[in-house]
Length: 145
Image 1 (cartoon, rainbow, N blue to C red):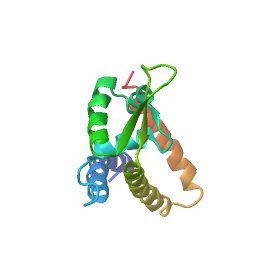
Image 2: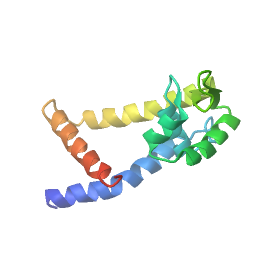
Image 3: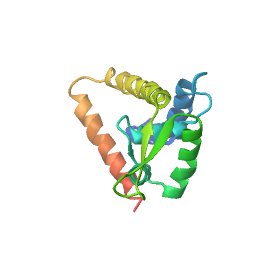
Image 4: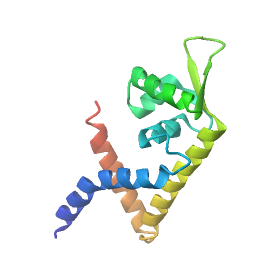
């Protein structure tokens, strides 16, 4: 196969493979009550917490969609809401201890995934891969606008 065909084949199949493998790896017995989407929301919340509007922007979703997902995460004990004292319209989200454990579990999957890629490359190839992935990310971002 030519390089262009190999790259196309990998890109076409990579997203679905990552999502499937990620779900198998992170949705364990302890976290069977949440989805990959929930894990990505908790990743956007971060360990320090975040405002609802910032989380929605980071995930490129509406505040309404985030509110629905956040209601579920709060109900399941992964996150909690806190209204700003200065502006009651602003809502902060913080991960609970249970949410922080899920966050770390998810981050460990990503660490292993990146390590698996990095282990196949020598020092000169790593910046080339980084540049290629930045170009790919830029290509996808142009469709958001």
